[in-house]
Image (tube, rainbow, N blue to C red):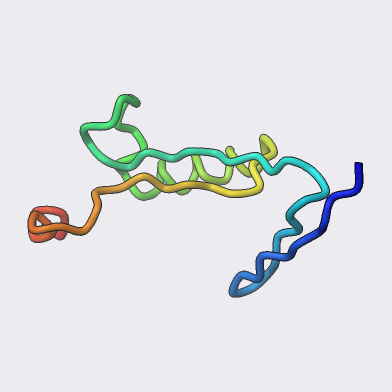
Length: 76
């Protein structure tokens, strides 16, 4: 099966889409996350993101509080 290849251009690199399935790592950084909350600390979150990359993640989805009327609470 021949797939059309697309390129997702990012600020400093690009991802090739279509040749293979890309792997997404998920990093939850909200205190009410189902994880142990360790990623709510910036250094641990960064270390976990590097670990996900080392494990093969092509994309890292960082889950945080969405902007909303409660945004002031997020900035505390």
